[in-house]
Image (tube, rainbow, N blue to C red; front, side, top):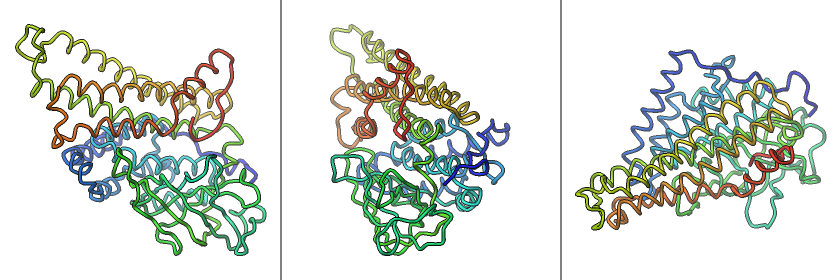
Length: 418
């Protein structure tokens, strides 16, 4: 689709007025307070967080990035990151489930027509949750094989969003975080004759031909619903099909917005481990015999390590907030330089949130001792959640992108993982 002025991204979000900001803070804090006490049981027994997600929808949190002109709060990347981090601190899975919801809304903001935006925004304002069906497994490459096609299997003609053809989606996806709980499943599809042409098809979860399978069995982030979705000749309407590859042919903030939320998930998991670490040191841990103190909290080496974890987490938080400001500037004025700066800032935050969350989860056990390994406490979930989620995309390539940017003035590649 040719990107005319009418199909360019809508204006970037602005700061919320104080009453709306307070309402948002109250909503996220109330949901986090509700979710936190059940996090251990949900992880241990794999209890799906349906009730918590209904609260998420009813509170309006799912609509916070919908532009104000469409009835939403119109928040930007900084606020999204804050909300995700708060939820992930309560329960890592609960923090990750909405990530693809907000990611799909950013794809829609950047590449959708006004009519497409109005359609999906109306659904989200009514409480609809968006899942995802992006990734595929079973091959040693990143080529997508889920096709958007005509009844005879051939490629669509022209712009599928503007045509009158009957089009279908066929294929299989995995790592479909949130799809299990979703009302709509944004699905990455490609043209049968050219996999470089891709779209994000917003497909109702109850459409004939869709099979959602709860087969995610990762050892961490256990209730994210990150299993399989299969599509068997699923009929899709033109107004559901939003350009995807076109949105990476130019500089857009889709990648930075996606990644800043992943950094926020890691940060929230790290803070959750921090909370349990402090509690364990104060309430259960014993000082080492050579420390010469009566309580573990007085052990000088314990104090030193607590300080190290604190500094790492707070540094990650500071980089996350800096990245949010830079990303919002890029949303307001997207261009090669502004989007590259946002991608690099988010990569920096993602590197530190990764290392900080893993450090916090590891140090929790070191400083609270053998009692912290008791199964009933469920403290191992912090490490399992951090290790699982930080594998989403490799940090080693973020170091490369950051170094190449500063050393060689090389802008990062454009895709959703940077």
